[in-house]
Image (cartoon, rainbow, N blue to C red):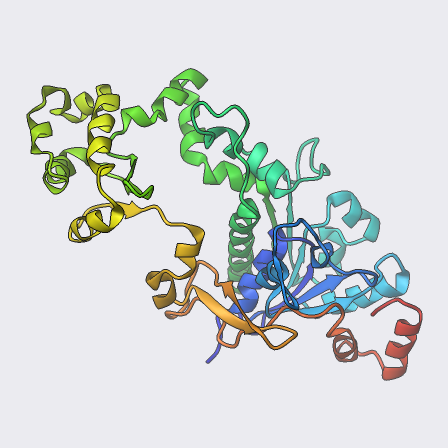
Length: 404
């Protein structure tokens, strides 16, 4: 079956997660993604050691997650011969995808103007921390800094009373940003098909954060910081609150239409007396007296284990959900039913599970034929021969450490 991105060739000069994650999403659905790496140690994400247990057997799980299904070519771009190798690949490409900062791109002679002059059909896609205009375009930016800290997540998600900012989860902004990059590529391919014009696509971790927190960012123009903090107060939203069971599980309620669900909630938890309490009659009443209502509901839900509440809530067609652990998510029947995790075989023959992208095509989220991430330079020789280099020329490039 022809894949959505079949026939699309992407040259990916990018490292770590943010931009390579986008390449993985397109590779999942048919694109040929060529990951360009350095000849010495390759993408530094290959050898990143952060002490969090991401390595298992012969697999670096983070590398596999963000580079599955790609090809790898190792080239020394600081040499003229190495740069020529890259340019000859770009001549055959539909998309050039990079996370290098503008000053590095300029030094290598790989600017949008230079590459599109050489290949007018080339879609040029770049991702960085803080965008491509303004004084900070060359500032180093990672998920935890450009997205989490600068983008407002660390502050806006910090629990009341917590002194230090909330610690980010690994690669959260990178993977959200990767979706944005993939969307940009898809949009640019559509434009080129319709008009023949090749676009330059810009995505940053900061732009991703502004969009992801847009509900807060937009509202902030009508409120002072103090007003905005009160708007987000849990006490004012007792029917949009996580209640703890006796065995320390949490039931998250999300009753935006609280008048609709309020009577049923009282019935299901066995607290019809609350319907007669004048403090809780209307939605404004419940917001004004939120702390008291939370205390009442919590005392009831907190008296029983989740296993006792489960059949009651399962039978209720309402927007609630049990707060799941990451281990719960990994074995969730809905995750399995939708094919959101899939297996690959890694170097030592063992099987590991990776997460599929968030978009399914024709009912399928995962790649049709899952492949592990490539070894460093695994496809160098084959790609060079396809680009017109002779076997002798390839051997000479290897001897000179121009490629690996």
